[in-house]
Length: 154
Image 1 (tube, rainbow, N blue to C red):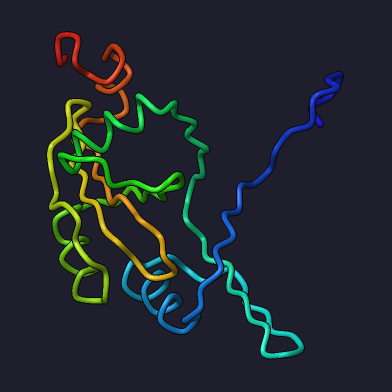
Image 2 (image 1 turned 180 degrees about the vertical axis):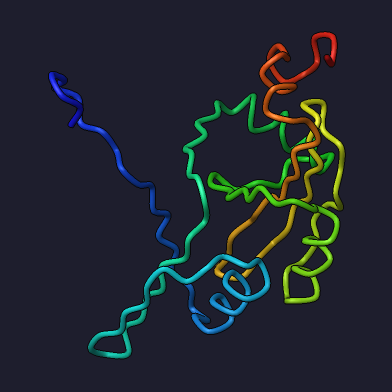
């Protein structure tokens, strides 16, 4: 908790994903995508879990209209399940190529969005649909845009 505040402070966001093919999911997310291993544990009955570091975490809450708009921009049609995971990378094209070679299925190739990022959409191990995105503007440039970059595209 923050001093003098009754509101609890969240310290970390963890997305827990069940993967029927645990080894393939680890190879994809740790080795191909490059998420560093933070910890791994095993238990009775062949129980296994690996915690992978994914940098800064955010929780993006979107209403149905926003979800449809993102699908339209990134893919051209409605494809996303209720939950989709997005990873910011330095090179969306190279990462997409690497992830497809590692077993992902490309839904849509890297596409420039109205909010000036390069986004690809993939079906990935552990039954996740993921977006790989590369920011095409600096944080200072992004701070100067209204909404999703449509108003003036500064």
